[in-house]
Image (cartoon, rainbow, N blue to C red):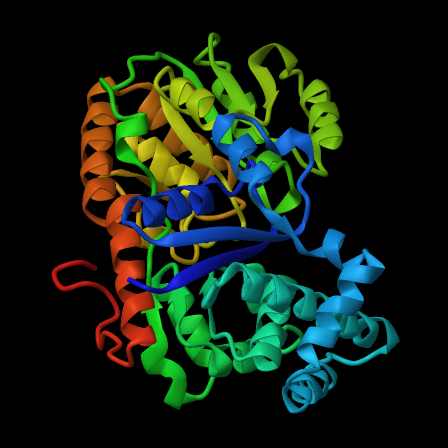
Length: 415
């Protein structure tokens, strides 16, 4: 394929977005040229393994380049070779502002970044831009495309963008994109609610994926070890998990919960754990590399994710690939991955009692854990493997580049 692709996110690589790194690696393995761009440079705390360090070293940082006056001026002078396109991009920035002085100022910061990004893509000979996360970085992608003529597509995740679809002009971004990769049927349905029906056909479903081989092994045999992996933020529902664990300790005195991740609520959660008398039963492990997470999952009883809002959490896929049962909430696209009672247990969000009952069921039944782990592994292998999802994404890139886009939401024979 002659298509040379740039990938753009707000921050790359991040410890919490390893699925993007896997997607890039899988596309490269298929022979595609993929170069990575990031609006901001990630901190070293995100470079938890060799994969992240290598990606960070090879990523173009848009904001840093834009803060260099010579590079910024050079980029805009290059853009002025197509003055009509530059003016259209400026009008688009103005027209898609959500209003207010601060928001409008940010729109013109995005415009400045768009020129720098466009110049970089031209210099590198990149012919298509794909964006992950449809918020500010996708605004930069849209303005860059209007300014340069280089087409873009994006992966739509949610759930937060669905809270403010008009602020982020999801309709305009979908209308101007070559295609949109939605991570689930639920995600696609939300996109359909905010865009014109004429654009529905270019909303395809591309699952985030994992490399099952990285996590595969014998079914874990741990007796009472729960694992949570995610940002320590309010949306993840960790206080609900603490309430459930506190009640479980009476019957499972050796129960231990390991929390992998970091975030704005860590200090508050550590204090909450102390107040509940849970400190001896908890480990705050911070960010960990993919290899360390895989090892941890191989020594656990179950993975638990009591989130209030999600897309389709990749950590659930990782746990299922590790033949681990999962306990999570019945929200958004999660039921498209986890079949309740088969590969895991789904509970209402915010319900500590229901979460406790589900966890107790697994802690008391090793056979059920093994059966669910087996079913979950099979599910990930057929629908959420990074190499097969990358193959479908490559088909979309090629199809839209040659004006022969696939007519289906998913590859034939897959959900």
